[in-house]
Image (cartoon, rainbow, N blue to C red):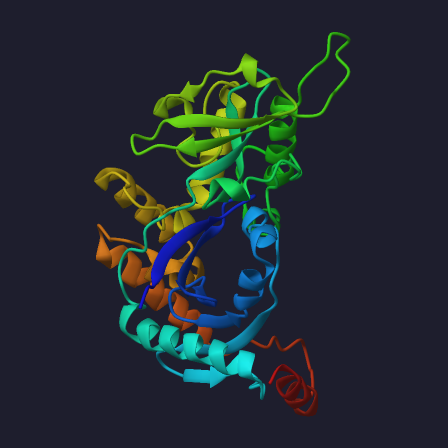
Length: 331
C-alpha cells in the first residue's frame, strides 16, 4: 500500500501550510493538523484516456467526491455514498487512506515537496515576491496573474506605528518595485520566473515570463532567494522596515516552516505569543518548538478568550427587558 505524505505552502500571500496524504485517487488534507477533509476521485478515468491523459495529466480534472471529515475528538463524519461499481472501488481507496490517517496524522514532519516556485521579479530582475509553488515541473503554469497580494487578513490586522493602512502601502510598494519600466517610463507588464529549488537552497531557472530567459542567470545562489518569500533588502530602508514588520506579524505562520535556525525560531515564538488565536490555529503544524512555555501561554489565552462570555454594555437606565432581549440575540 503506497501512501504519499507531504506539505505544501499556501501562497500569494504566504498564509500557512497544508498537509496532504494521498493514496491512489484518495486524498486527505488539513490546514490545522487536527481537522482532515478526505476526498476520493475516479482516477481510472485518466487511465481510460490513455496517452492523452498522460500528456496532459496535470490539466485533466477529475471530480472529487467527499469521503468525509475526521478529527481525533469527533471521529469520522461520512460524506454521501453512491451505489455504483466505480464508487465502491473509490470507497476502498478512501477506507485504506482513512485507516492510515488515524495512525499517521500526528507525525511531526510532512516533507515539503513544492520545490517549483514562481517568483515575481523586481526592476533589476531579482526575486521580489513568491507567487505560487508546484510539486511537479508539469504543473508550472505560465498564465498565472503576476501580482503579489497582501491578503485580507493583513488588511484587517497588520498594523505598524510608522504608517496608516500598512497593508495597502506594502502592496503598493511591491507593485512599484516589481513594475518593469520601458525607455519612456511607461509601465509595462511585470516579469516573473519559475525556478526549481535545490537542496542547498539555490534555484535553477526553469522558465521566464515577460523577460527573455537569456537575460537571466541559469542558477541563483541561495542568498538571492528571500528567506520568507518577500525581499527584505535592496529597495531602501523604508520598504525594508515595512517588510520586516509584516514578516514579524506573520510569525504564527512562519513557525510552520522547517529548518529555522534555533535563535530565529525562538524569536518568532516570542512574536507569535502576541497572536494567541493564530498560534492555537497553527501550533499542531509547527515541526518543533524551542520555548514551549510561549506556545502554551498563547494557547491558554486563546482558550480563555473563547470561553469568556460576551460582554453586554448597560447604558444609563436600560430596562432589564431590553438586556434580556440582547442576551437572546447573542445566543
